[in-house]
Image (cartoon, rainbow, N blue to C red; front, side, top):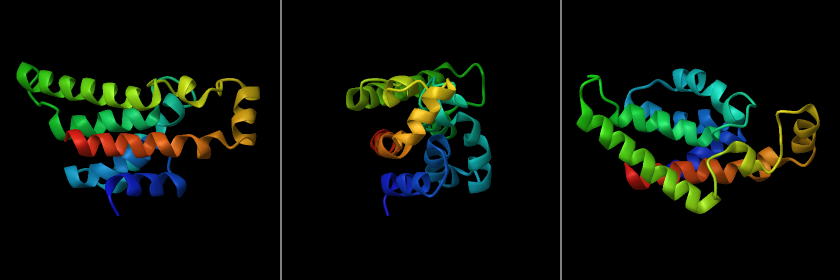
Length: 144
């Protein structure tokens, strides 16, 4: 099973979008799977149903930080390398899905009870979100 298949499988098995991406890559970067699930949990649904940045995207950012984050605050070279990779990720993800925003991607306002009920009734989380999780994992594999 490749990374995009693993991330999608984790999502369809019950993890949220951020957990799925982080749990796919984190263990290979030294972060235990149970810790990946804990860290990624609040970022699902665009940061706890706030519908800000897509959870698959924030999961990818955490993976990039694990792989390329700097320890030394004065290490500008490492910081620039990381931010360059994030820009590449953003460009590729946006080219595929037109946005990084959970609200735009879902096409539904889940910050309201009515919108959340609509999303659940129309099964939006399971018809749209797997593609975002898959793309995040695939793009990470391309750029790392």
